[in-house]
Image (cartoon, rainbow, N blue to C red; front, side, top):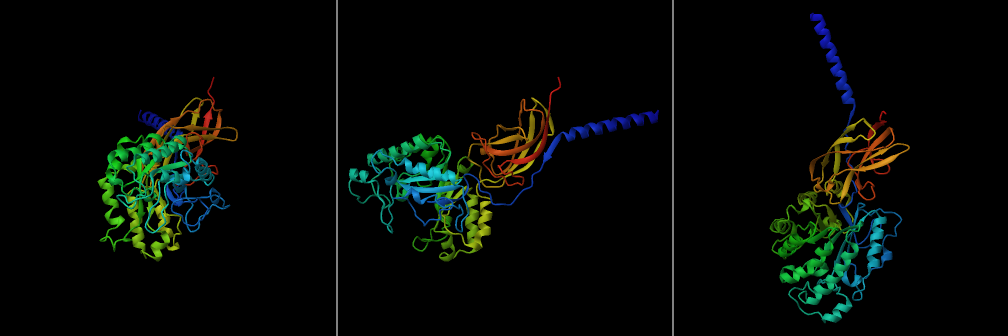
Length: 481
């Protein structure tokens, strides 16, 4: 009796183990290998300034009279002592875009967008009303507008070349911004609009002096016409930012000038610096600490990378402090003015680029080894975002099944924009439908949901020539009659 019970128990145990083994074999678990490369991805990293990858032109702060033929001519896209970037940041004067009242140079912006696309970049754009600096020749408003309002006089701040309280200013500058938005909002090659309303180079000098209605009249053209392309705004004037946050149709990002100012003007301004006395205080005062979760944060360098070394004589520890603070503020992009990076700092800059913006590591991906036709591929995925910000693009996680005969892409319901720094779990399923029976390679990518092309480089091994990542094999079996 005991023998028979032991034999039965042994048989049941073997059967259970067999069933468990069969079940386990049906689920493939992939743990991709992480890589440590610097990745060039959309909407993040360093930018080129007033030029595209490979142009290597002389520094020019705001384009006043520009020959479009100067850009995009280099056969190589390498930047001299500066990384290749995914963003080209351009600042253009109003007078260049609207040389005659109501006649806009869209051909110039069209050409910039076309070059950006060819250079695998997107265009971050600011149209400045004028430039007025004590140490440079002023770059005025359009001639037709100057004729309309008369000669320049002394205003509330030397940063103004015309009176922003004159109703004609908001009317005509605003009309140009509305026309810009109506033509370009949502353009796939337009990264963001750097909203400017007044001040030298459009940097907001004197915003706090504006009457509330004037400030609103100047901001409304941006927020009423740019509903798809992100707006970023300088943190200049608390009421200005509050109005944007309350009325914009989409989340508002922000940018700041002069990252790296540890004492440029300290000797004449009672020790005041951007890094110690402006950035942290303003971010908190304006209640913008969490803006990065929905919209991008961008900074611009104070001086140049090489002058940090030769003139400011920053130590490695000081450069690291600047980098660490920018990451604490969740920066996605940085305009270093296309300046040359001293070779000794390249390792620090590379490490910076691995943390700036987003960096997706697919840690674990599981799926069934076999499904029937009309069945579903249920998958589980664990992603780690090792950057300091999300991706702000409307990209989607996709699965592709491919063999020598067939290839089909399946879009998931993922919300990649919500993958904040840290761990993100995403489980879903796709349905291959009547895809013919056979063995397929299962591949994954984060894609443009219109073109269905991979857009983001992942920090893992296994990237194929066309940007997809192989996870392994899957079999589709024919349904039995």
